Image 1 (cartoon, one colour):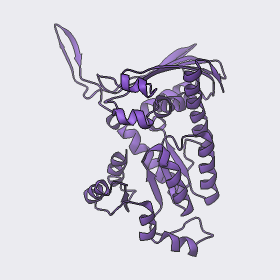
Image 2: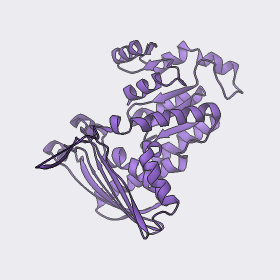
Image 3: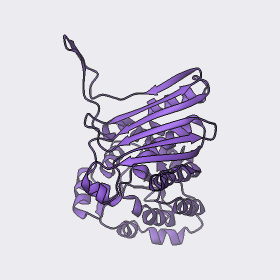
Image 4: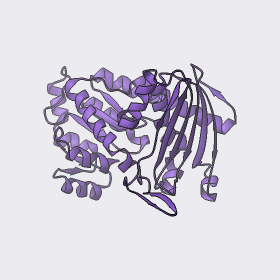
Length: 334
C-alpha cells in the first residue's frame, strides 16, 4: 500500500512528496529516488530534518506546527499505527491511515481523542466509500429505489492471495478483510449490526497449526431486521472477486466485478470474457485516487472526512465479535 499511495500522491498535483520513511532504508531510498524526494529510516529523523520540534515550541498555540509539512500517510502493519499516529498528532500533522486505525476499539478511541485534542484530522481509508460503483449502490438503497432492504449477500475473494507469513503473523480474516464490507453495508443500509455468527476453515496444515482461517462466512442481523451474509476467501484463483447484492421489497441493487478488458470473444464454444482484475490495486485504483483528493479537501478546506470515528470503532467491534463467535461457536450480540 505504501508503494501504491506514493505513486498516486506523486501523480496528484495537489500534493508534494516531502519524504519517504521505511524501516527498510534501501526500500525507502529506491522509492525516494523514483519520486524525487528524500528517504528516512525512522520517523524521528523526519521530525528532526523538518525541525518540527522547534516549530512546535514556537507555535504551541497554533493548529499548524510548521510550514514545511501538512500531513502524513501511514501505510504500515496495524500494530504500528498507534505509534506513528501519536507522533504525527504531537506535531500537528494531519493523518491518513490504512484500515483499521488500531487493533482494538479502545485504542481507536484513544487515538481519535488525541488527534481531536491536537486539532488534526485522523482519516481512515475504507475505499468502498470512494468507489463509484459502491457509492451508486449505497445511494440507490438510501434513496429508496429498492424499497425496504431485506437482505444482502456479499462475496470477497482475494487475489493473488497474501503469503503464508503474513497470514500467520497478523492476517486475521475478520480484521483484515471483513471490515471493508461491514463498513460499506452499515453505510449503505444506514443501519447497525445487531448480531454476528461466524464460521471459518483453514486450507493448509500450516494454517491449522496456527489456528488461522483463510476462508470464513459471517451471518449478521441488523437493528432494522435485515440479514447480511459475507463470505470471504484469501485466494480466488480466477482474479479479484468483489460482489455485493442488496435485496429489497421493491427491487435489488448489485455491484459486480470488473474485468481486465471489456473484450468478449464469441464462437461455437460460447462467450469468452477476460480474467477478472488481478488485485485490489487495479480494482480500486480510482477509489484510491478519490480518497487522496478527499484527504486534501479535509486538510486544506476542513471538509469532514466521510468515515467518522464511530464508524471505525463499530466496524472493529463487529470484527471482534466475529472472531469471538468463531472461537465460541455461538451468536454474539452487539
